[in-house]
Amino acid sequence: QVQLVESGGGLVETGGSLRLSCAASGRTSTGPRAMGWFRQAPGKEREFAASIAWNGGSTLYADSVKDRFTISRSNGKNTVYLQMNSLKAEDTAVYYCAVRDNWYSLPTRDPRQYAYWGQGTQVTVSS
Image (tube, rainbow, N blue to C red; front, side):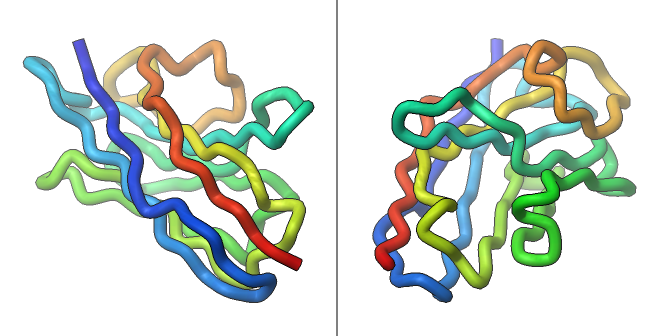
């Protein structure tokens, strides 16, 4: 089993920055798996934001966050990060990190291919 704990959310003004972290723990931890960030705004479905390959060798972004958000990982620390710059009001959401279902996996937008999810951290961007 894998436990994921997100942190780093908060309230920020439009144009500001935040850095989210997601720490993985558990008997098997994440292993060499891709990880991702999703978000869910009030009244909307959960949507993909960013994903990174098991070795950090490739990344994938939603068009809405591309060139503003950067996903990275530290395998030694079992942690994935999401650096969010130039934040907009429409970025307001609960952000969830997730771990893919198999080892040596590549990034994907499909939430069905993620086996473990964190509880989420709130990001609020004031306009």
